[in-house]
Length: 251
Ligand code: ADP
Ligand code: MG
Figure 1 (cartoon, rainbow, N blue to C red):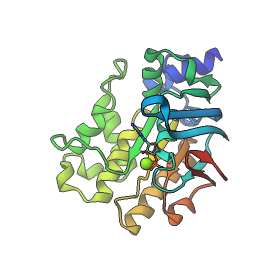
Figure 2 (cartoon, rainbow, N blue to C red):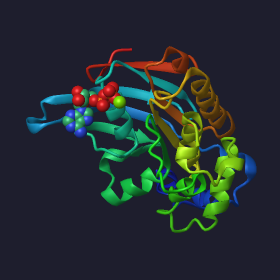
Figure 3 (cartoon, protein in one colour):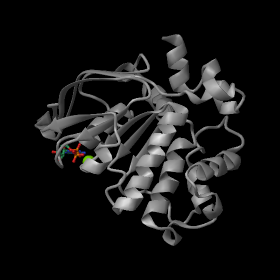
C-alpha cells in the first residue's frame, strides 16, 4: 500500500528513480498498474437523474490493453475520466495499483493525474506551441523533472516525429498531431494510458499507426491501456473488449 501510494503519487523511491532516469533500464520500464473497480457509479444533473455510469465492476491486470466499447452516450468517456482521476465517482471503489482513488484528497488526485496519460479524439494540442513545446507542457506541473526538453524530444522520437519537433500543429497531418498527443501522454512515464476514441478523427492508415504505436508502448513499457472506441479494427488490436450500455457493463 505504501509503496503503491508513493508510486502513484510519484514520490516513492521507485518513481523517484524513474523520474530522475536513474532506474535500471529494464525494470524502470515496466510501469503498468492493475485496476479493480467495484460498484462504480457516476450521475449527472439535478438530483443525479442522468446515469452516466452505473455499478461497474471491472478488473484489468497490469499491462493489459482493453477496448471500451458502446454506443455514443453509453458512458465510455465518463468511465475513463473516473479511472483517470479527472472526475470523482458518486459511489463505488476505483483501485489503481492497489490504491483507492475514491478516498484520495484533491491534492493526491492531482498528483495521480500526473501519472496518467490521456489521449483524446480531438488532439487538444496548443496551436501556438510547437510539437516539442506541446510535449514539454505536459511536464510543467512536475517541478522535480529537470530535463524537460530532452525528455520531450525522446518522446517525440518514440512516436517517430523527431524531425518535426519544431512544427506547429497546423503544419502537421491529423495522424501526426495524434502522434504528438501520444508523445505528450507518455512523456511523464504514465502507469496508465487512457485513450478516448483516439482514432475517431483519423483515416484507417493513421488509425492503424496510432494503435500500433500504443501497442508497442505496452510491449516495451508494460503500460496498462484502455481505449474507448467504436471501431472494430481498433478493438481487434486489444487483448479484450468490454461493452457499455446505458452506463452498465454488459459484456
Ligand atoms: P460516451 O463517451 O460513451 O459517448 P459519455 O460518458 O460522454 O458517453 O456520457 C454518458 C452519459 O452521461 C450521456 O448521457 C451524457 O449525455 C451524460 N453526460 C456526460 N457528461 C456529462 C456532464 N458533464 N453533464 C451532464 N451529463 C453528462
Ligand atoms: Mg465519449
